[in-house]
Length: 79
Image 1 (cartoon, rainbow, N blue to C red):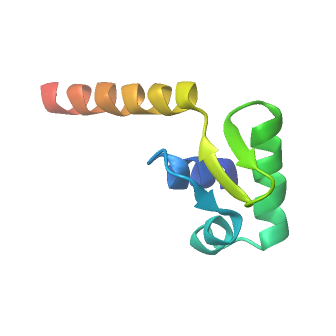
Image 2 (cartoon, rainbow, N blue to C red):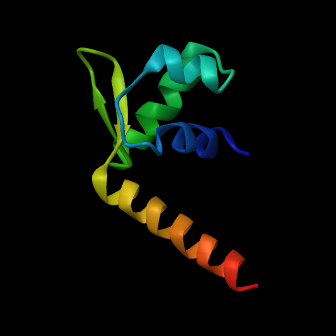
């Protein structure tokens, strides 16, 4: 799984996550986690609160991910 995929997977619950938590769970140096989150923020995939250093998925991306998961489950059940 790519670093971006791993971070998106960690954020798929829609809750706010601390950058330190993301770095630890993804087994990344904090600087790399910050760089990836910053990149995702530049393209509006995530919301980043600069004051609290917390991150969450943007609502449209969260809904997109949930819909993909739902379709994957339907496909798996129909096979």
